[in-house]
Length: 127
Image 1 (tube, helix red, strand yellow):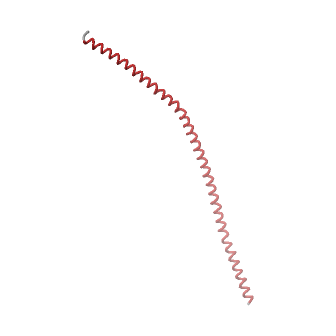
Image 2: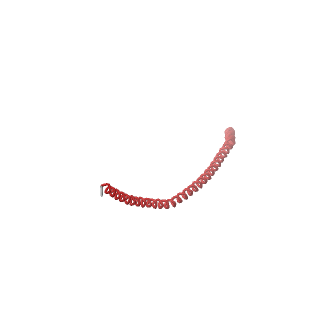
Image 3: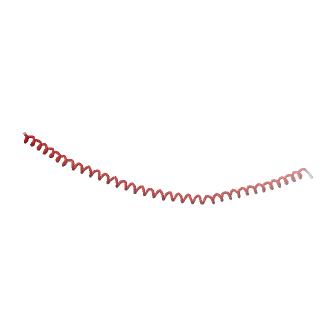
């Protein structure tokens, strides 16, 4: 055998070993990809209930928010009505007080004048 044949045999053996190593590593890569695929599938299966629950929670929060807004609007209306009534009562009280002040003042002045007149009469009558 000449040297070229020996190198040719060494080359064929090296190529065979390389092919076997390539098959071995491709098998390992395939197994790793399958494992990653299974993990992703499990993660996806676990995410579906989480997404559903989050969606339901969001809908409930929107519902509660809308209900709270409507209740707040009703409370604002009630407070506005109470404020209007209180202002009306206060204005009526002020009008009533203003309406009574002048007649009461004039009556008091008249009583004062009459009592002064009576006092003066009695003083003069006693003299």
